Amino acid sequence: MRIVFFLLDTLFFFLVAAALLRAWMNQQRIHMSGQPGRLAIALTDWLVAPVRRVLPRSMVQSKVDWGSLMTALLLALAYAGLWLMLASALTPVSTSSAALMLGIPTLALRLILRTVLQGLMILLLGYAILSWVQPQSPVMATLDRLCAPILRPVRRLVPMIGGVDLSVLVLVILLQVGLMLLG
Image (cartoon, rainbow, N blue to C red; front, side):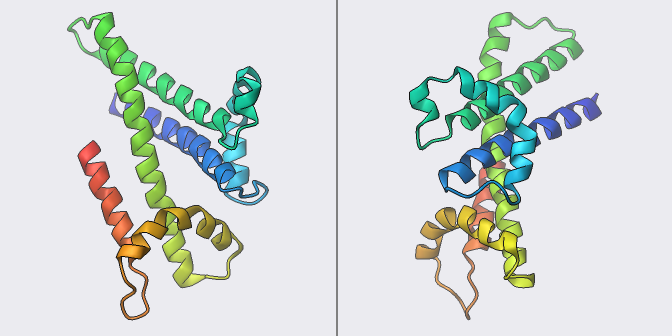
């Protein structure tokens, strides 16, 4: 049964991460025609488009991509519901419906936080590796626009040492600590 939970975690991690990435790219006004925008749209458009149709017009025309954020939330709630259904089916002890209802938002929030932390780590590691190996890569400009707002406060605190920017390393360590606290 661990395999089923692993597959469920992986599937919903990628779907929630794509929805959150889509929202972040729209917030940063990054054109979605390049990567990773096309991937985020391909993974989430089946759910974002209907969600946007039911949102109030003021939310759709907002600077915040509420459609993608609501999609991430709906996916996290679906994940939590499925996870708890599977877990309660495996345990012989009967679980009250009230306990299940309290567990769904908690598990959904935990998935969103974990996805944000792990997603940022993936973006930062990709950014760091490309900055060393292929700094003129077309995707480097996109990664720079995605990571710069997050790195800016850390760069103010962490000076460059020998011409090397250690802010990515410091932020990855902080994100890892956050994952440990969440775990």
